Length: 254
Image 1 (spheres, helix red, strand yellow):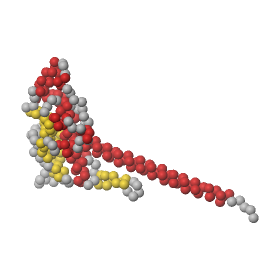
Image 2: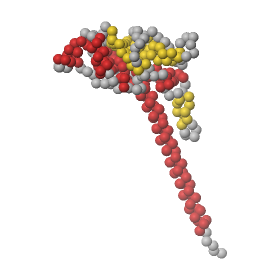
Image 3: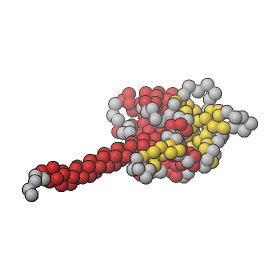
């Protein structure tokens, strides 16, 4: 007895094709997820790299001694003599630090007897993401709370990078031998449940060592330890109040 087995034959042909299509779709979705994960991880790493690598970008140095114009030479002589007015005028007119949003909430300068003091109002610790990305068994990334020790370490790296960036720029703008850079930030104080703005880090940086640094490869937090500094830092509590190396005017505009 003969009969037509067209449907059975079709089934035997289509089932492998369907399985192949489904496998290709799974592979496509897996690759898409991997690309998405890689992008999310890269964006997070890039952001953290930006706030902890502020000092990596180096501005062009002004070579005052090589200038031939009489007006410029007059300014140079005043700068070399430590003229407070000339130093302040050049710093205020030439510095671009105030335009770097991630650097700080504010920046001010004082000059006293030729010694430049830069004061940074750091961003709060919230500049550091409070989460990490963890890959789940499903392959998807999930946000998990960043351990306090990790976030505080990143915040310290940010603060150190900001200070080193300020010193690096100032040494390239004016011919000074050293500069004190102090940072203020919200921190807890005794007998208070609230955070208050206080000096948390102050460093006296010397021109020659800073100018010799390979900035893109320098760990700012480690580098600052080589200079006279004032700092109180706890792994989980973060920065504490310190006495800066130079006094900060109470009415300083940051």
